[in-house]
Image (cartoon, rainbow, N blue to C red; front, top):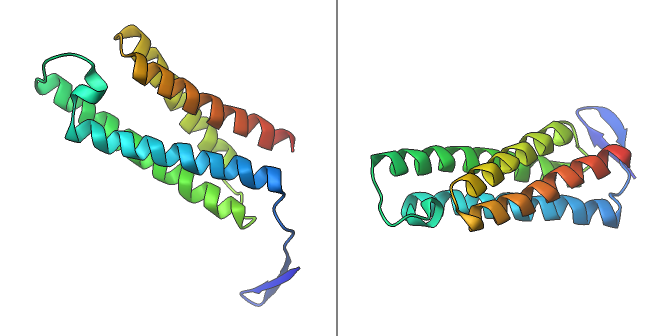
Length: 137
């Protein structure tokens, strides 16, 4: 298929089914990250795992929300753009997202928050595994 854009003709090939699944999986987990970032501010105990909420916990969940929402939105947007064959920037974005999730795993384990550790691990596997697969394909 040939697509005309800004007076240039660009050959566009359809995205393979496997690549589409990988990209949509990353969109899904990115959006889950965004939702948990927002829920953390609404209910700080969801992330802190402890019985009390103080100024330090509130600061932490606000910082977590900013990071989770911003990276999650960027991953979702770049992955959707890659569905249209514009994959510029996808690999570094997935690497940053995956590494930030590894950080969540470390925090979750060190602070005794198993949900954070497990969720971070799952997202890290998806983002970093996708980055490795996309690099090879």
